[in-house]
Length: 192
Image 1 (cartoon, one colour):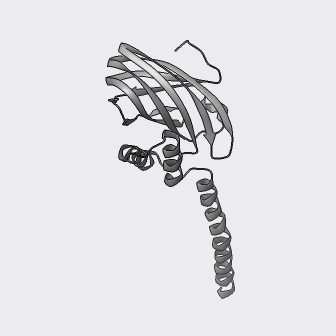
Image 2 (cartoon, one colour; image 1 turned 90 degrees about the vertical axis):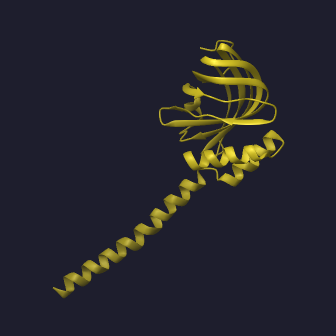
């Protein structure tokens, strides 16, 4: 009986010692496949050309709510609305893995939304398996007030992928709307 117990304890000890490094390695691998908050803030600051308290708070909020992104998009967009709105943009998708792709987007919206804006957009991307998976429609609800030097964020989700566009721009656009953004590999004037 003592031999069985000793063998069982040795087997459990061996299993635990070999399983722990594998688990630790997977956790490290997962972190290596995502961006940390400091590197995202640095990349966003370089892209926007300034650091604002609003930008830092928006990024902190996204990390708190969504965790670590595995990609981001740096781009520019313009939009306008008078109840019915349109938004067009283009940018570069950068994955932590090193993969990159050009991305264009357009989309309609409807709601209590008035005004126009031109923005630089830094979009955090979560759970993107490969660059081609970005090319689809992402529904979202937008409720932002755009003003000179202002920062705003909203979330778009589809098929397990979450996008968190952070906008700093010029213009005045107030209200709330629902719609979608269609991300594509080529530029088009068709917002649908």
